[in-house]
Length: 187
Image (cartoon, rainbow, N blue to C red; front, top):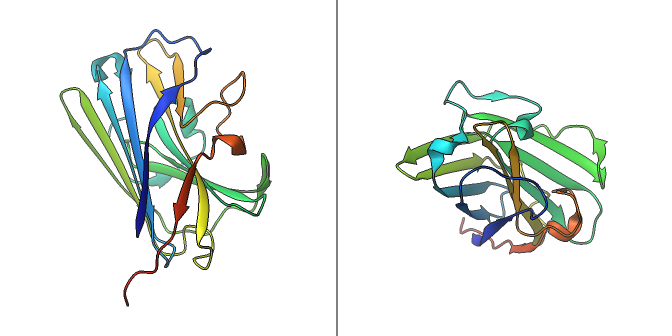
């Protein structure tokens, strides 16, 4: 199993009255199609709206509030997957044929999401079971990691590995800036 990790940067043109925060993200996947994604926010969490932990559920529209997102694609193909994870335990998974053209949703089991917070630190970890990622025979994946943070006044900030356009757009393949090389796990 290999890990890709990076710091996320805030989109420079979106107004943000919220706190100065840093976000680190990491992603791992194995050859059985199981993955683990972890996001860590450090800063003044009291200035953010963080959904309370609840029952795990598949929910659309998580990006309208604080949530964390993972985009994954085979390098040689236009199709990609999107996963959304909220600190509440709510989640979503989407498939796309190509840029923003929906495909039938992937039939994946619910990820296990764990949110932990301490003074000035929020960690959200999502474990995606086997078969959640693209075909495990694919050896190299392009990954985009992103986050949406909601300030107390409802303003949203958009964080990603990079922001190639004038507006925040996590679906832009140029933002799938991490390469994840999948290694075989011992049997």
